[in-house]
Structure formats: structure tokens, C-alpha cells
Length: 109
Length: 113
Image (cartoon, rainbow over all chains, first blue to last red; front, top):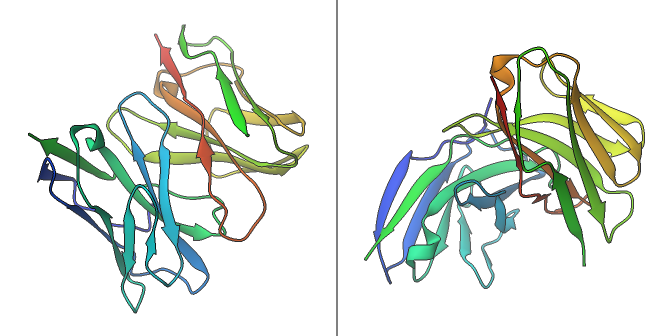
């Protein structure tokens, strides 16, 4: 069973920030938070991961709450190509990640 | 750079027939290897996990088996396919322990008819 909870779908206007939430209230102290996305019929693409601190890379930012029970993935300027299913997962050292149903993000012009 | 190859990309098989999906990773040594399955409209289910040659962990009881005959080769098999085995199968790899990322192949679509 997935250990994370995400909204089934979200809409975002093109050019605006997309904020995707994830609840992982049972996360353990050494588990990382990972985000992936999947465009239809392709393998999931790694986006970002973090342990305690907020993280940023060229694709997105990851905000983890202080109690680590939830996180938010931020796509700062969403484009139509960001339309995909976004998965949040937790795991030790990146191994054996379990993925739930994810959030379908629809970016609209 | 590391690459992962998975084949065949699509497969249509009759019920009761055998299955063999292959996956190889290039550009790295001693990777952790994974097989995931995704049913239509569903999330990713971890099927098998391997940390080394001949070391396979099965995550869910099922009609499938996995083998790792070489360091960078991972094979998913079945002796007799069921209709419920249809889905999108993904091979993935990671290296090491701390905070390392899992990278996925492009997947194989299996339709059992």
C-alpha cells in the first residue's frame, strides 16, 4: 500500500506556479521524499528529492514541512509540457519506492 | 553516462503462454534493479527488487518471477500468463544507498488476450 496521499487531479494556468501537495504522515526519520512525473506511455522521470531541508533544482522546488509529514512540489512557471501524472513517494536511500495513484496535473493555456 | 534498455516495447500474448521481458543497464556497476507494474490508470506497483546477481526479493505474490543472471541484466518471466498480468512493466535501477535516485526505463506494454 502507498504511504503517501495526493489529490487525484489539479489544474494550473500556463505560466503560473503549480503547487502539488503530498501527505506522508507516517514517514520515518531516515526516509527521503521523492517526486517523479510520468507522461503517458513513458517511464517515470525523476524530478527532485529531499530529506529535511527544502531543495531546488532546474526543474522544481521541494518544500518539506518541519514535521516532515507533508511536502509540496513547486513548478515555478508551468508550461503545457508539464502536463503529466506527478508521483510523491518516500523511501530509505531511494530504494524500493512505492508509488500511489499520483496527481494528474493539467496545465491549460 | 548510464542508460537503461528494456525490451520488447510492446507485446501481445495469449493466456497461458510464457513471458520474458529483459532489461539491461549500461554505464554503471552493481546497480540495484527493480521491476514495477502499472495497471491502466493506476499507480506503480513494485514487483521485484535485486541488490546483486542471484539476489531477488519479491514484493507481492503473483504469477511472475524475476532473475538476475548478470550484474546489469534483469529478466521478468512467467510460465503461464493470466489476463490479469496485462499492464505496463517498468524496469528501473539505482546505485548505492544514501539518497540515491531510481531511474526508470521506457517500459513494456503487455496485453494478454
